[in-house]
Image 1 (cartoon, rainbow, N blue to C red):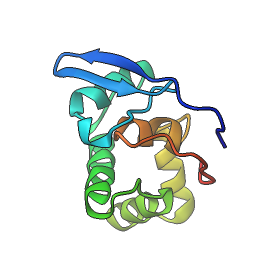
Image 2: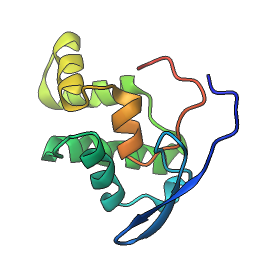
Image 3: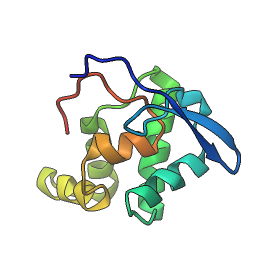
Image 4: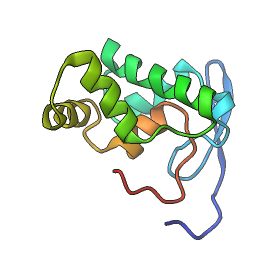
Length: 121
């Protein structure tokens, strides 16, 4: 859990500036854009595929519906239902897509604030 205040900086993108914290998470999820997601993906050395975008879009829709970042278990359930995979295989798929973790990559790319504490990876 973080205890120090965030150091905020401005990231200049082709569609305008966004404020990010020192870990690169956007500070205002409403300022998110696909360009921001592409920027984060490039920094993480990830080439976004249609499946990446499906997950990001699911996360953005969930944020729009509920006002909080969606927990990984809901993303896993969505993938499990869509792909007909078992729990093990769907977890492996998610970590193939986001190899350094759900929070570090998927949550950041989808424009959620950095969680204060998160136990799901």
